Image (cartoon, rainbow, N blue to C red; front, side, top):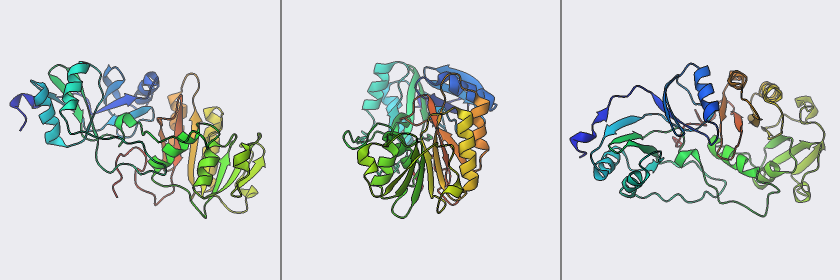
Length: 329
């Protein structure tokens, strides 16, 4: 049993949000905009008395944080293992001491994921040392992946660009993917990284762009290319409503909001995944309007940079499919 010195300490915050790389200010602005109170921040961690709900600019959110007074490395390790088996160290201070604690925990082998992949079913907690004798730990986090970063076994020869990693990650988090019999409408498809993913899954793709796709992508019998404006296509142009609408097109957030809103209403039973480019200053009020769309989610993927990914999964999909860690099934 953990020593008496590792009893839980009182805290003044509800959640700890780990900001995505380079997005600390955007995360703080988002939290303040929605009414959260920032209690403290250390490195990439933002401690908040929070309004419930996922934070788009958080790479991972510690949903059940507790602090413990610990009198030794062994005491800290015993405290953690008394709660659950699997822990990931997010080191922010006293790095060597924190690493020694991690070394005493049961090992976890993070193998690169082979896409199509499943979200790990085992819970993964996060911990850090705030001081030599002050342990922060949360057994429940919003992501089932260490620091919110799934690592994939990359394909360095097939896809025409690295954008395919965004879609791999998005489909993994969504816990669903298109397949044979599904029609996918991809808006702004060139040079074809996302089309390549959809083609390998066996779906039928209508790829819309003013520019050509890579020749090897266009050669697939499952790919139909339309030369034109990604924002000019409507559901009336299609023989049947698509099962999936996807876009990684470059545009201002306002235009992408209009795109998401149109397709979510035009195809209420389709899955929608759209990258939201956020170059320059991010207006949290503008970004939050994406969430006014029914069943919408926004999150920062590990493969994203200064952008978010919009999800609208059709009703009847897994509850809280995005942002909620291990698959309950």
